Length: 336
Image 1: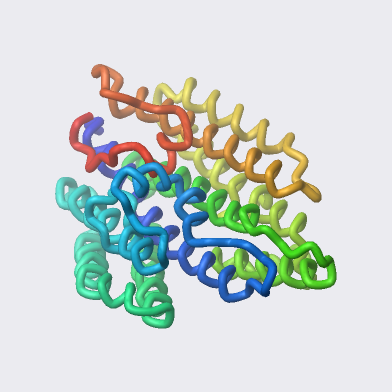
Image 2: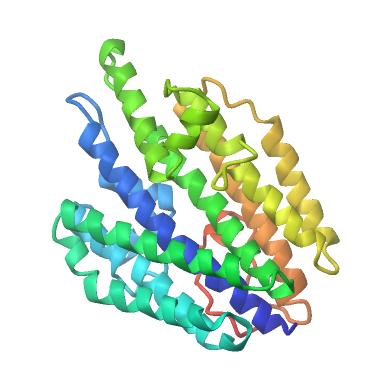
């Protein structure tokens, strides 16, 4: 397979995953704000920091009010991590290799792009409208992945699709979990405890994980249990450890994967060794930053081996920017 085709496949699913999870992150943050009582502190600017977009927003003078930030995150095409820009990039990538995908995939990605282009402005008109539009983005994107899983040969091309999806998904899961670490709770434990339970329930709902949590952990929503579930549960497909297992499985069938496999297993061992019970918010934030850095290192190893082996690309960063792409210029592929 040509490196440019592999790179386009990889980035196509990363962009789609980014669009869906940015929608989930916005919905999760909205729920946090709705649940906050008097005395708790949290602002929309925190969402920018969690997403890794605070530097870009500051450089461009983006206002920190809800409307300005929603425009920046949903429909600002100058922000390569916005939902509209991500879907547009996925569409342009798909255009270059339609012959290796099921015929209907182009139609569904194009439908998703046309939907968000027509409704992105509507999503900034209020929380109810925004929730409706973002949920539709999530559903349309999931229909694309379902079609890929059910109608595409699980060959080398498919492995690059899975690599992109799982690296982006793991990174965005850490960011959605990280939202709650930024909430400053009231000092009164009588108020703080039930509030924290509601916040973590909102996080589970944002990742469509609440029912599976109840099935496999319990009916009580405790912060340490939710963090452990979303980071370390090997069976739920949005947890970080499950994504790392999927990445390792993809690499195992690709040629010349020793360096990428080494970096992946190193990240897996570091994650397994993390003690996530009863962490202070600042410590949890540091742990999640480390996970994002490890995912960035996996991305860098994959890019060096499969996309830029015979080139010297401008930059293949190994930090969180190289993974989530929130502060790295996004590619549309084709340069490899």
